[in-house]
Image (cartoon, rainbow, N blue to C red; front, side):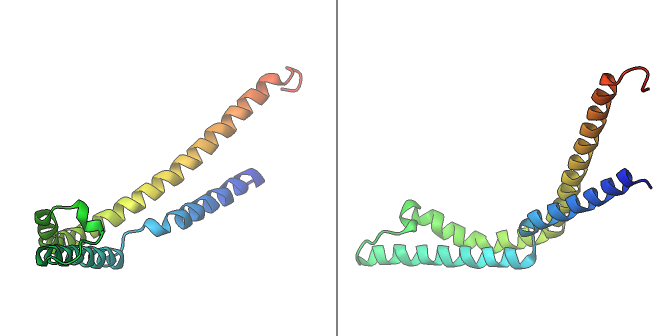
Amino acid sequence: MNGWQRLGLVASVLVAVAIGVLRYEQFPTQEKIASQHRYNITFWRGCKIYFQEMDAGKLNRESLCSSYKRQHAEQSLENELEAYKYKLSLLSERQFQWMATSVGYWLGVNVTALLALFTVRWIYRGFRSEKAQ
């Protein structure tokens, strides 16, 4: 391998590492799904309490739940467990999609860089005199 090929290989590896680092936070895990589930359960239970307090005639305090209807809040609380199970069943598919998207980004950056290099090389050769060729 000559120096340019080695430089291209090192740059390709650095691009792969950079894409992995930038996309790491988006990698779907069971813990992230569970954390979101806990948050949703807590929120919808709070909405249920909010509507119970409204029925009891307690002070009407401002809440995020005030933008929802009671039926929507109760249904969302009931559906949350099913949604959690569904998200868990799709976990491996979502992880595969994350990997495929990351590889796609890596390939896109490398192909774009290669095309730019070939274009600059082609333009540069067009300006050289015929004696130099």
